[in-house]
Image (cartoon, rainbow, N blue to C red; front, side):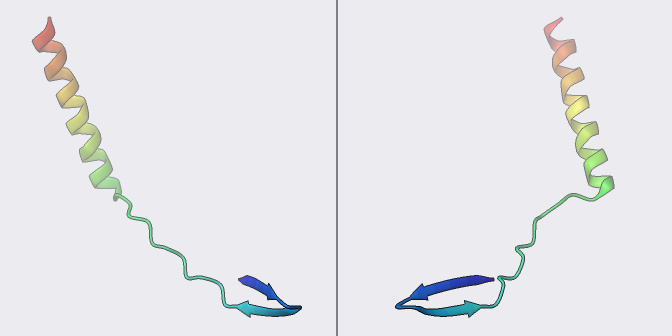
Length: 48
């Protein structure tokens, strides 16, 4: 809700609609973690 005041007159508007936030599902988050862990292991093996 917002309130605009000008010359002692108030205008009240409706609340803004919430903005959707993109998220990952449980399975995609687990897959991302596995990929990052795999890349980390590959880099560790390559450096030693």
